[in-house]
Image 1 (cartoon, one colour):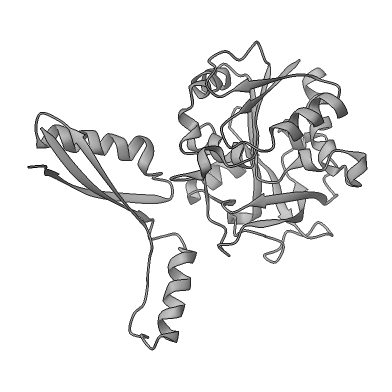
Image 2 (image 1 turned 30 degrees about the vertical axis):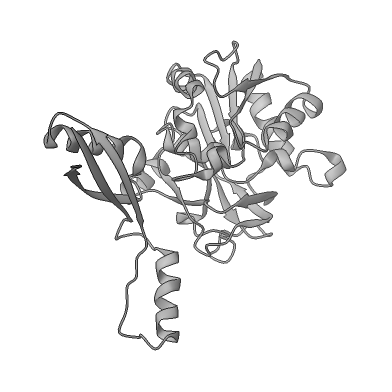
Length: 230
Length: 84
């Protein structure tokens, strides 16, 4: 299994992702420049967080047209794995590889803090092997993370078990108060219908190193690894 | 021929516009409580080369659908006028 991390102008979590995959999880990782058109035989492509193209127009709207994105879309359509974190999630929604869109936080503020996530989908790789009774502490850092999808899309996502994570409180209760950004139905992460494309606003790669005294994010990567190797 | 377009992009009516809501609130503080329902969008100006008005409109429409507007959360309208 070879991993690729795409680097857009303005990406700023690419190093953290490479560090997590390579140094902590001992995986084969390469960086992929956004102007390249070769995925270098990567099996699993990550789109990292950051502010690609300065978040101009809408977050992710311009990055979606970077040359490498044509290849990422083809890879996803062939059934290849793609995961977007934060800005990467926004790019995947703009590219229509994931349903819905990410609006400004209802507070209009950029929010950078630890939040709690409740795993939901028993079928999506990032959540499948997690403890469904646990609240996972993972940081968020975004201004446009308010997930929105029309009712009929939400219903389809629920019917197909496409919601991977919802914001919850420290005890795992999914409440309005524990929703940091106004996301509809507390949605923090989703996957596509075919379950090979994943997106989430919180940053598991920022909670993967023992030195940081929080490795809840590492369990999300370990869930993916144990399942794709199985 | 050259045309110029003025494109208006607005958050969908069904969605909360927190920016507009905050501005509506400050209208009251200004003593302008008659003003309500402020909604804030974007105005984009651009130039387009086309053989006629119809072609220019079709190119602007395509730019809106493909990039300028995300129809999951926004709507768009535009006017296209020839540049003298």
